[in-house]
Each structure stands twice: as C-alpha cells, then as structure tokens.
Image (cartoon, rainbow, N blue to C red):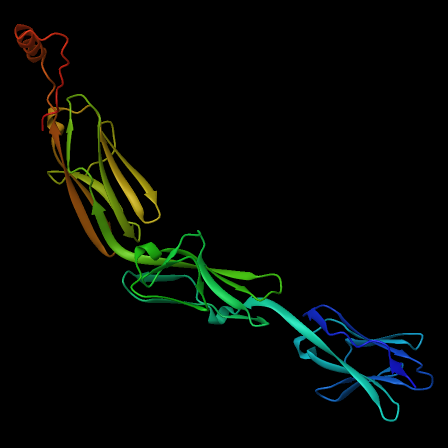
Length: 325
C-alpha cells in the first residue's frame, strides 16, 4: 500500500513570496494524490491536474514520489492547513501548515502627525501599526535623550499611545514611533512636537563695569516658542541698531537664544542702563542691565601707597587693587 515517507513540514513565508509544500509518497502505483485546503474543503489538485481556479497555485511532481504544491505571491488569505490525500480505502492523509507573516507597517490614518501645543496642556501621541504577528510598538526621542514621562525619567515608552500630562518646553522635539514583530524590516514614523510658550528672560549679571575706552559685552538669555523677536534699547527707550558703536549678536539653539550687546570704545556717555526685550505672539518680557564706570587707579595713588610702605619698612610688597563699583 502507498505510504507517506516524511511528514509535510510546516512552512513560514513572508507575504508576497512563494511557498512550497512537499508531500512525499512511496508505492503509489495506481493510486492518486490530491491536495485540499482544509479550512474551506477546497480541492486544489487531483494527481496531475490543478483543479482550483486560483492562478497562483501550481503543482510540481517528480517520478510519482514527490508531489509539491506551489503557491506564488503568497497572500494572508493563504494562511492555514493544507492536506495531502491518497485515495486508498480508507483514505490516507497528512497535513502541513502554511504560516504567512507580514512585516509591520504604520497605519497613517490612525497615527498622529506633527503637533503644536501650549505649555502645561496634556498631549497624546498615537501610533497604530499593522502586521502579523501583531507588532510591538514603542516611542522614543529621535535625539536619544530621556523622556520626562509623567514624573519618571525613561528612555522608551512601550505601547501605541504616548500620553504626556502638563507638557513643558523640555518635551519639545522629534519622537519616533517604532514598530517591529520579528519580520524584517522594522518601521518607524517621525512625529514633531512643538511646545508654545511666552518669552522668558534671565540675566546672569545685572550690573556690569567697564573702563573708559574698553569694549564691553552685555548678555541676556531668552527662551521662547514661537521664536521671539529680540532687541536692545537705551534707558531713554531708543532702539539700538548695530553699527560702529554697537554690535548686537544673537546665538540661537532650539528655543534658547542668547542676546549679546557689544559696546565699543566705552565713553562716559555710554554708562547707564540697557534694556533687552523679547516678544512673540504669546507675550513680551524685558530685563535691565546697568553699566557703570570702573575707575582706573591714578599714578599718584600708586606712588603714595609705595612711599607709605617704604616708611613702614616694608619691602617688595605686592599691591593689589580691587575694582570699585
């Protein structure tokens, strides 16, 4: 009687590729081999003839021993059990499973796009992924920095939803939704989160001093989004424009901006207060820096101090002058 030499191996194939299910029989003689789709009870082939109307299915056979079912361009609908039968009495059969895996993909219509939100509001970023097996989804920052996630510092947030309560400017940046299921390639989508807030201004030195004829720099640090318009004014309220006397510079990184005002060849009329101003569509702020004269020690003062030390018998003593404010 005919017999199966080997079991039909289970086959795993990526969607779009070809699959081959092999049924090996001995002593077939006048009996016939058939392939059947188990779940639908659809007859696919009988001996040398392909019965199904599916153009992607064909039959390969060799010396009445190996009967292989060939499925081209495998689809998810092809996933399931396939039976190889011999028309003995009783019928002999064995089954093999075709597993169809699908690499992950991002479902754009259910996934967040770039967002602009106000500081202290709540934000939810959603990422839906499809594939088989079901993809694992995680969120992380594109720059690799940790995420301040609702009171905890984490590098990765698991799951399709990234929910941040009371978002701050520190959350601003690009986030990557990454989906993987063991079927290459993994896939990601980039979502830009922009956080809006009114300008904030800090001054490290509110009192500066300079000698006559010296160049001096005044600095204000600002934070704002949208990017603020920054400028300097004199204590009379006149806007300062860069030229031979003044040089206004700006060094910007993300939502941070350093305002630097360089005053060349300081004269007596330059001493006074300077105001740095930052404004955007959400608000305005300013700060004041006072520039005072740093008196230069006179030659007469130095000579008098040396003579006094000599009268007291002090030799080779170092004289230290402190800046007076």
